[in-house]
Length: 94
Image (cartoon, rainbow, N blue to C red):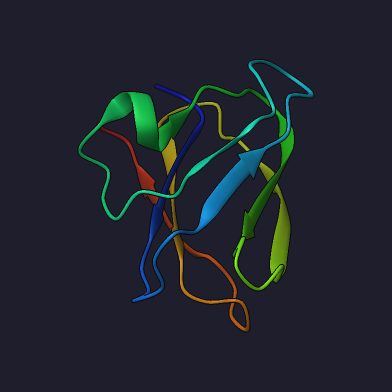
């Protein structure tokens, strides 16, 4: 299913994630999951350009990326830290 799968690839706990709603859905803050197991908590159904933001509520630190969904497959995004880019992988089976 097109859109973004987003997970935490760090040891940081309590992080939140936000995905803009330019093309679909809601733009609320959600808990950043440690894996892709739960569709409801890890997947954002979007189609087009969106902003992905991760924040640490205890420090106020934030980092965002402007991303485009793909026509086929899903883009798996792994947060690697506030000083790094997202790790990206295309999954054609999703």
